[in-house]
Length: 74
Image (cartoon, rainbow, N blue to C red):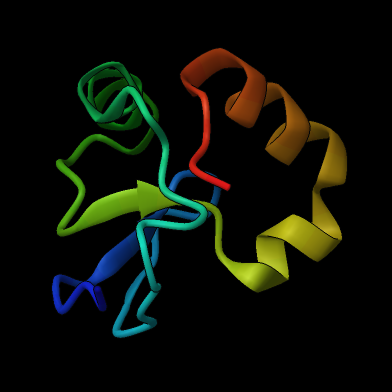
């Protein structure tokens, strides 16, 4: 299954039209991630929350912490 909804990066807050198959990379607990995203960025995510490839490369420690906290589909 390809998700057509935009993906929003938990770290940088940017929304893009990246797509994923079988929800790979999405956080399990979208509700908790959305709540923290609102606090952190001052707005709601425009799509499912994940970590974009650029932030994954630039912030591996932050990525790991977020994935451990919210769980991630692999």
